Length: 453
Image 1 (cartoon, rainbow, N blue to C red):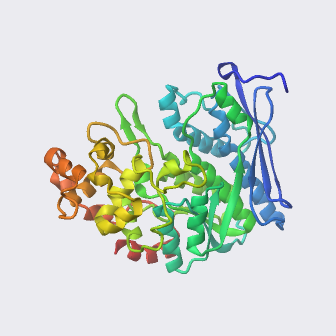
Image 2 (image 1 turned 45 degrees about the vertical axis):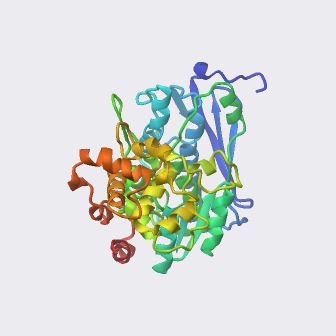
């Protein structure tokens, strides 16, 4: 197809062409196309091949592969957002179609908002198959595949599971040296999964493709579900807290959640679908779902084991490449929020030493912290906590002699605090575990005590 050219607005159809997994090499191929254009081939590589897959587990791997193929297509579909979606090969059932429509519509919510697109009526997955039979239990071995991202949240999960005696392997996707260093610091078995996007996608971007945020946690969840079945283990564990379920409130638009696929709506739908459609004994859950961001920060602050290794600065994963010279840029919303969230629970010299400077004593940072407080604007499109958490943390610092004279805190106390209802500024209620979750009951009974303390 050498004469085919990408013309975004002329494209009519997005095609799911085929997918395959080679147990001898550990390589999965996911193939897509627009109209009659060239095949777009993505590869996902699970280390440790060759793999011996028996009949029932081999069939479950194929079901997980198909689900990954369908979810990962969001990276390519968004380039042109055509009106027709075509699934080649075996058709899907209505439950799978409904899940995919939720993932694409909600997961592309920020993308659609920023590009001025309305995708609600456009995304339709064809459901032609009869309802799928209930997925069987496979007798998977008790072991957790834990997603590690290099930040505080996954490290809190890893240490909580270690304390409770849960066997685990830390897993990540892609070539981040920062994540690899954090994974090494855990001293646990590690699984670095490779993912190679179809190279044409970058060329399409140069030719005017729609671009923007995708629900990457949904894609990574599907990748780890496939890896868990290939390895024969029974749990995929993420570290998304309850704050992830709340988006930014945009005047005239409504709620747009940058991290929708980190929220409860995705976790519950995807986890249930894995057990009904892929493998009945494959558990997918977030260990931190009942916690607020501040509660996670309090847990992290209890150990300094990762102080020199972790980073919650997203710019490290976009701008600085694989070997960032500094783990904290100090100016992005993530740096602002993590600094603010840790400050109430950590000695000031320790926190300033971690980040490299005191972000709360820099007047130039005031607009960034105002956004976290939802003061005269909406919450940033970033993985940060709720506005009420930021307001409670800032109010707590305004009471503390070691923080209250810092420029950002002093200005908050003078200009913003008098406008706020004091009843909504208490830290303690935000530290209580609460809300729905998918954590196995016996594990949660032990964790509840740990996380409440």
